[in-house]
Image (cartoon, rainbow over all chains, first blue to last red):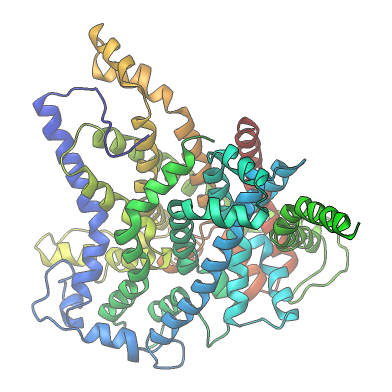
Length: 293
Length: 297
């Protein structure tokens, strides 16, 4: 099931092909439009936007909106720019991605190579947890974070994202390890290798592709989360998405659209970069895991 | 003797180890997901307002909820949004996948461009579309400065049309992903069968209608399940794009729950609405997961 090579056997005439290219091109424009709007308007003075020039290339090129969005724009009450919130997001994302991926790998290993009665039901319970509307956990979560002393802390947010990410990471590793030959594991067992030795020496070295999938998925989801950040973050550890929303929705003063666009790009940059650099591996790894089961 | 006992302990440890390794994750999920669900459902039967409270009120929150016009509005909006969002994403995703499957030059680049919105936060998507659709500075203003003075496009500020701008932005964000799902499905179809049918003189239209599209059933099902659960969970996009307005024109159950629980201090009613959201998703997800996991045994 390789996406890149095998095309359909269907043949099309010249008129039809031209039409197809036209439609595809039209949608390229559609998908690029918001990115174009954000980019060109983030490097022009505000008057050019308010004067009806949103679609034009900048007449005066300036990086001022970017600097302002990063370091001096008013977010909430403080004129800090988005930079502290950018680091808040990093501090929240990194441990959450690492821990949820490690747990997912171990779970996937147990659920495929050390199967026991009822393991599919347990996996089903974990998987369903990915799809619940998070509104159903907001109220008790606020209380529990408070009781754990994690209310309004970055660790609290990381914990939340670990809990609701386990289902996905387990799913990925389980599907991937399911097609890994069990005979190799049995042979190693006969040679006296233990649970962790087998994981460390046999499964882990070939887990690269699926680890990439899990890391990209978790990174994107957690970086882009808004609901948990808005509900549980304290004033000083809000993630980037919440800060961006505060910047854009601020009701006081002049609306600096160019700063908003620059801020939006700043918030999008990490996930966009990951997608551009590693997107190929994401699709490839996903395919490797879903060939069978 | 001691050596034997030690070996025995080791094998017993080995047989418990897998379950031991699984248990922290399982405990987290049981407490933070299922325990919390039970707690929230319980709260929906209590008189909780600003804080959780445990006075039992039976179905009162639910009967109040169903009498609220605010809730009714968010359900109607959900209906419109989900129907259009799922429908348009499916048709667009399938169409683009079929077109992209015709030995297209630059397929890789096009695919990347179609898919990148999925990497963005809904807050970013919402911000971009919010200002692009804003009649004061966006499309309407641009068209008017370009000389088309009677051009009007104020959907985002118009009570009757604002919900369609949410559909537009959401379709923009996810249709490329649906396209990728259908493309993977198309690439899995056996070409020999198509060639045989072509020999028999079947037209392209008939090939797609009779042979190819019916074989995409699993892709249709996955797309439907993913899109419907995304639709019910839609929250950030509305917050960033319209804030639920103008008025209540773009309120959805997720925004309703948030405002009733955290700003209006009607936690019991908020919990009741969250319970209804959960039940709706469960009705779609549980049969799907059950079928998926059973097949894989």
